[in-house]
Image (cartoon, rainbow, N blue to C red; front, side, top):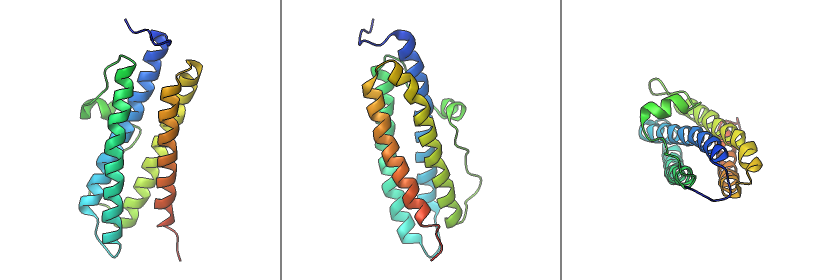
Length: 156
């Protein structure tokens, strides 16, 4: 029996939202790592290093999100099958050109932001400040990363 001041019904609803958030984050992690391995072209070094920073940051975030789900006393999803059902981010077919990689990552970060925002009402209604804090921190990172990636798409 978990007694942290949040009902089981609310904890379950929050955990379900966080599971979608985890799936999006993990899917974006995989995509970013994939692009890191396969990027080519004149921006190779810049993008290769940038993608590495981003996938390392996402890897840490995946653990934080999963542990928050566990703190609510629900199992965290952790298989490709589960993630593929829960994520809002489409897989990439083939190896896109560098500019298309950037566009896909912008879209991925924006998708993660939308998913995070969708969890807020439930967390706030349940006075789950820990989840709200995690979501706020993640929103700042994803919005900033999307902005940085978008800036690479601007024409001089």
